[in-house]
View 1: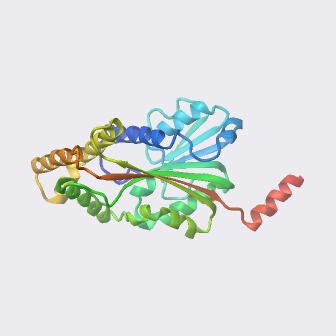
View 2: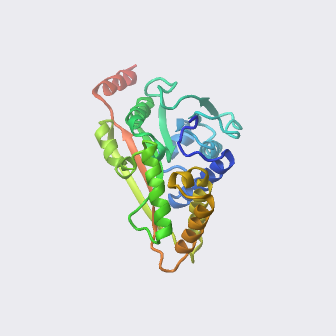
Length: 282
């Protein structure tokens, strides 16, 4: 599959879900940039968005911080990402060595990527990101995942089927639920900050209804591959999603979606500190 994520949606459907997720994260985490790098961005920094999806994040942040240089890598070029002079898009295989030297970036941002990554590629990609990140600089990763609070047999059936489909694609969701521990085990970080926000998927208030709509849109868009995987007809699948919609909008619904923001600062090695001292002397 040519895409850098494994969910086979049509391009327009995929861009719609990415745009909506971008808005959700911006709302939940109080802005587009969560790492403590705003002053550096104002003065001029070098930023990488790893696997840039639709390019919305890079485009909006680059417009807000014109003194900084933004680089975005993905296997497919977004249509709107090259509208600004301070954005450089590079089309490449994100599962191979990134086309940048060591210690190149002041800030690396990624959104949802580790949720869809094959298990055998995860550690390699993580180490490659730390390779291009400067010592003392920040990695920010934002993603969403389900919790144990799932209400309704129809929605649970869909959720369980999607989890099973992930496993067939060699996607291990345990990575997502323990991402902070994987960062610690990498030996590349000295500070890790994790912020978790649980949102209840329940009708009756605007934000909850908005997330329900996005979730249902995602499942309806997945019918082409998820219905055959579940060995049911498209009609039965559509009815299942409609039943799940009724469950999610029920007053008794307690289904919860978890949104996580992880900030990790790359630690200095002894060699890094020696080189930094020499640079300051010169």
